[in-house]
Length: 342
Image (cartoon, rainbow, N blue to C red):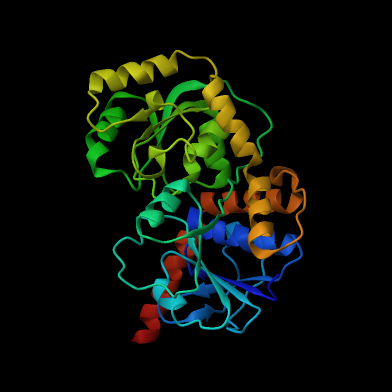
């Protein structure tokens, strides 16, 4: 067991990757460890700030420096190979939250770094690079706890980011032909409500890791069609049959046929129901993985959706989203910065 475990995290970002880093700190602390988040900017390691609002329900301690001594541990996501090279004494872990965002880097790894992977896709790719996977450390989704279930409509949810270029024409075809909801700047509540009423989620993205949106869709009983890129190339990260994974050379006629067949189903079939069971166990799996990697005492963790602190921050996050609070605050900061430079 390590004395203190420092987790490096990009500053000012609220993404699935940065949420996973906060989830790691939370799981360490809830299982008797001393986990601390360290925010990293382009200029420094150890930015003094509070956690992003959406992550404040987690049990987070913030550190403004890293103690690189024997007995401590340092975890960095795959975007920080250069930073990891300067730590010589603490045990270092490189957490591959994706593979694609690292592939252009030519920075050599420290010899003693331990590689942990969020997806089997990343694990397979780094093995191909001659690296050894120490262990899998995945993550889990967070959704807004809705009570009433709405009847499903023939509506398609679609992301607006990270679309694989080979699938762009298919993505545009669906937008033009079907009733769709594009996922853009939605709070957890708004996203959950949209998934709850939509029958289908289509994601022709690059899937650099085990993405959250397909799992959130399945959690809310939607069916899923994905590209056959990244983590969707295997049946562990995305355990769906090939009929639900589209190749880029599919004709629009065949694509329409698959979508219409899925619209004609009233409920999820056994493939999606089995996928949902895995998703519902992801949080416990994650806590078990964290305890194994860092030598902590395992605990049985309850469902996050029943946690009052979680509900409280999710409601406030929705209010901030509706009021466009963060967007307005950013504009004020920019105006103030411009004024001070005069």
